[in-house]
Image (tube, rainbow, N blue to C red; front, top):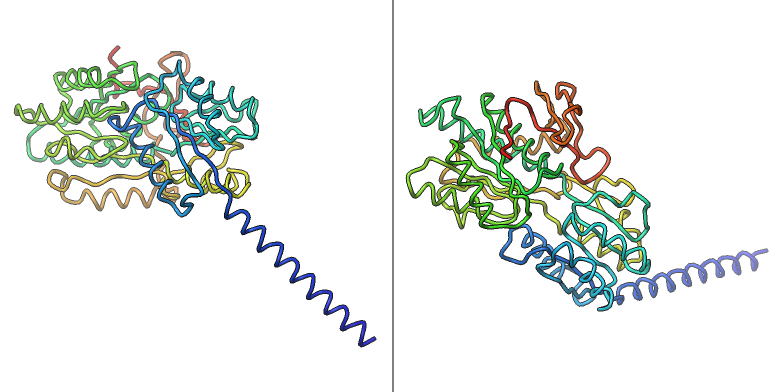
Length: 399
């Protein structure tokens, strides 16, 4: 009996050792796996939107993965050329492909269906869970949170201007340069407006669209028109520094006007007018997705965020959204504290951004109306923004 016990113990120890041996070499094998990661961009480093992704690509290249990960990118790719560029990345041996413009979604999903051995991740799109594919994913930061906080910064500046007698309550007007009348843009500028309105209740906003994602000239023209109309703080959901440059040029001519940026700090191009910027930190998802592919795991299982099928998004709490440096030379005293307080409240879910005594109308369907006294939960079912209503009486869209 004693001998049998000894044999049993020895057998168990051998099995444990064998399991540890297998686990050790399995992990060792995983650690030697290499992959190629491809990126498709609609611009280049000169466009803040694209540079925000390029920044994430560079962070991936400098990550703990070292030479296990190599990257390749296609720059200045139009929507019409998206499929061609994606197929080129497939032919170049990419194991993971990130496509970074909403307009690439259909092409990326089409190629994904043909190549189940490759993982495709499409930023800002909303088509992952329609006829889902296990190798096609969508992702986006819940940027309405950053827009709301940057709106608070704008509101603080408006209040200071009113208190100094530089403008009246009725002259507290925001201007917004938008790319298209899409939910992504409307949600963003509405959150920005509501942040400002939480500080200055009399604020109103004017919106002009460029009807293109990237046009330095058109963005400047829209910003100039908004300033001429009387807007004193300009923000944007467009891809160049054009609106920031216009604000700086206007200030040099004696105009009392300021700017709130997107995707990158714009203090360097507008040092006397840029108040703050907000952006999505795409690297959080990109690095997590790369880690998943290296480990042979499902991408959604490795990403910290709000998972909706094959779609993931998150806000301040998981580090997906950031408010960039305040321009301490021009923001009012107490702005930093107000920003930090709002971020903490958003992390705790104590601020419902899309709520208030407002009525919103779908610009494409006047019969589609929402009463914001009941509130609207943005990003409840997907990472892509869905709020698409223009608030009556307080937001005016110029066609």
